[in-house]
Image (tube, rainbow, N blue to C red; front, top):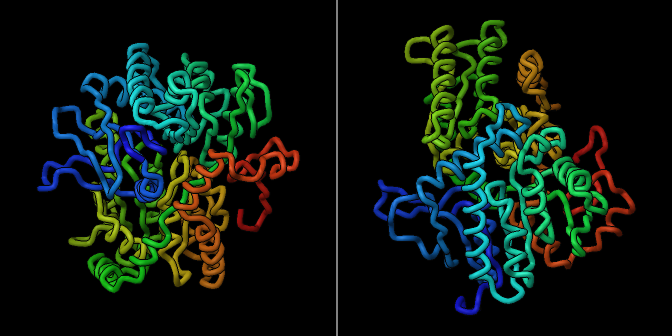
Length: 492
């Protein structure tokens, strides 16, 4: 479609799919991740536009295209970045939506910036969307956009997807602006979540707080129907499969083990540096396992990747210092000259190197206190084509709803965490392979492209009617709005 007449599909996200890199001659580099790949392909097929913040507040030449799709920048000032992003988005909503692991802060001037920036995104989407177009809004930073956009452009088809958890009603009620947030989300035609529990939380709090009528899967708001469902995001399986079979990547995985001293067992953690990820608790559990003799220096090594996150936020800088102190203590007590037991890296990593690490690791530790999904768990499973490897997974990661054959653990329970890691280490090979086979069947059942296509199909109203799919079940909303059927001992 001629952009002058508007785009058929507009993706609205806090960030563009590229980031500014001063160290690169090209300056604007692709942002990593399957989500970028999936949305890029969808936009390519729909002649669409990606609208978002470029990630910098200083004057610069804005990116206008990526992989054949058009980009439109939404500017945010330094003051707005501090109040809207560091403030309301990440010091109010982020902790609240992650079970208030840390206390959220409520400040009116942060909220005012959140409203202002959401209005700017909504106006930009209204300006660039063509008649009757589809607009897909993403994540917690932009929860007011659906209703604001509907008021500006009632002709649009609007979808919203939340990539992080949605809290229980008891937690959500703490938010002073709770009604405004709910009303903002109800401006969408379809509201999607990572897991059924989050979708049900949203529908129930909307009915209780706003008096909205309907079921968990269908809400009725001001003469409109709002559909609600769980759409668990997945990964680019084909890309991972290509890398797994790449001789250079496989050779690199062997080099990694050699560089680690050719240990018998490699335990791996890959996390964004964030207090919700439970890294500190994990290091404590591993330190005690060394003291207990379950892990032995020289035989077992740990690799912990902590990807930099929100480095301008002093809270995250403190998180980094505490973690690095803990790692130093474990190495001081258990390491040898030239042979630390914990190899810690605070850096971004090319995906090819990450896949090599997945191949090198015998045990993958994914133990967040709370996570919307956690794609690291799925990536690790997708890499284990030979059915080796063991996955220790937090019950409070969204991925646990699907990956029930993992060694599931309550990461708040230090003894339970130690027990699960020990079980992963000691389970016989036949049982471990059987678990991995089940995990791989589950991960292979849906990739990130099917996730995007499924959401957009439902948003367009082309999927089977939810009342037929649900068969009268109102309490559990499964993938694509259908009911969840969880059988103990079977893949979910």
